Image (cartoon, rainbow, N blue to C red; front, side, top):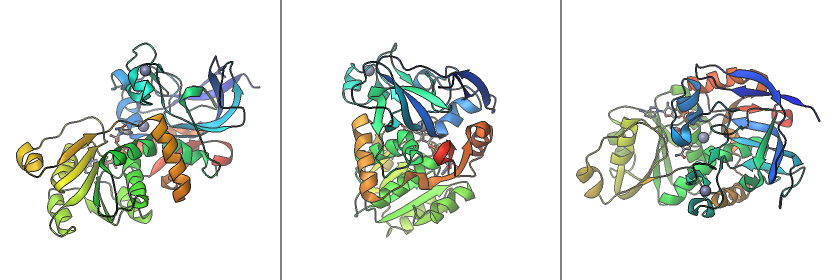
Length: 354
Ligand SMILES: NC(=O)c1ccc[n+]([C@@H]2O[C@H](COP(=O)([O-])OP(=O)(O)OC[C@H]3O[C@@H](n4cnc5c(N)ncnc54)[C@H](O)[C@@H]3O)[C@@H](O)[C@H]2O)c1
Ligand SMILES: [Zn+2]
Ligand SMILES: [Zn+2]
């Protein structure tokens, strides 16, 4: 076994620092993973890459970056109960205490233990390295039909979106509006298709992203963000508006569009994080009997359900990856994701680097 490895850190000045560090040893109940795919999230750019802006659960503590890890177990510590060497696994990216009420519901994202809640890539070492230690209780088995790059997409983005869509419910009666067509918005389109949505409309400001959404077939129509969006969406939906809307932009104007372009009795979910929104509760929500949900990541059990469904649907989340880089070029990978002129950006190794 080699003793040192390369790992990527984010100093917070729009650069990536590669350092040589010891290969970690798995402790009790932990495994050592050979990293195969680690993807970059909008949250990494928003809270860490340009500047260390995140607070609390989004506070970056100078650890190895990357909260969307997927790899293969190469060693186990004492006391592991289910997974073994050779298993292919996704890391649910927040390690909780395991015994608070939220952890017991599987929502380790909401763990209330200040001492034990630590997210990979934020407060404990993440996936942008050759190897990574993870707790066995945070692992989701990756089915043979899915690639490691598919799995990395589930660790945050697809898992998050599946949770949000489960809250609002999507079926064949629904026209869906997606505001923001970054990787999370693209994942929303891909999942809405498989859930049977009747019409999927996307909005973004970056022409490259609008084109990717159409090229991938995850939206039926795309609109450039602007003040006419509500009228345009109504026109595309018989004058009514959409039954369901998902904000994946975090932009205040796009959030207001998502609310206002939703028809009576419709449901909206906010996934994009940070920022604000302004609306007029009576005309925008109350008089039209609408429901607005917030949704934060997902649970371990829903993530397991999602990977099962992905196989059933033959849906490969890696299809929204437009660029793959080796770890040595992680700097280019983050810079590209920060530019927005891409779909999902992945740092990969071995068979995933093709
Ligand atoms: N709720 C959660 O649990 C959770 C989990 C993961 C990511 N997120 C958040 O979801 C959001 C999306 O993540 P991502 O990785 O796709 O990030 P991203 O930054 O790549 O995507 C955001 C997209 O919104 C677009 N946008 C900006 N202003 C807009 C406007 N006015 N109208 C329409 N589109 C606009 C951007 O051009 C971009 O394509 C981020 O805010 C991220 O932090 C939330
Ligand atoms: Zn994320
Ligand atoms: Zn907990």
